[in-house]
Length: 227
Image (cartoon, rainbow, N blue to C red; front, side):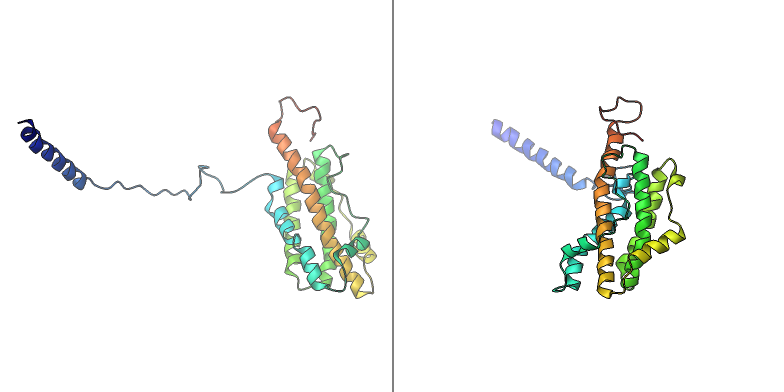
């Protein structure tokens, strides 16, 4: 009978298959030295040479992003945040958002000169808030950012540097015998620094992206971004 013939044969095949699976050794995956998620094949993870992605730049914007909240907590019931518009320092260098600046070099020079000025003005903030860790951290970040920007410049030596007399005069011009006014000026400096960094960042990012999309030697867009 066919059923009696194929039954023992089918049983034998199933038994052989079970024995084969049982004797098979597990497959081990050799660990690698590369960190999880690293597909770069080398180099520093997360490193970017783009100035618009500078950790110094973005860390300052993150800290200054809380400035309004901190101001309101300090002067609750005494002053509104909008009052800081009355304490703006008109002599501060402009940022790179000015459309008349077509040269990348001119933009970077303006950034460095502006940051150097804010570095001097932070002495006033530090005097009014000597225990503030934010001010100390920002001074370090500004120096780092200045170095990063100069590394991108063709002629960093052309940056205008304030003399010691000019620095003294700048601090003297914003000084006041009134404690409240001095603190308002200190907060105005932080506000203006935030605006300077915030408004310049998209301009730098746009220029850097333009250089990536239109590298040297290829046809440039109708409105070129010179270097």
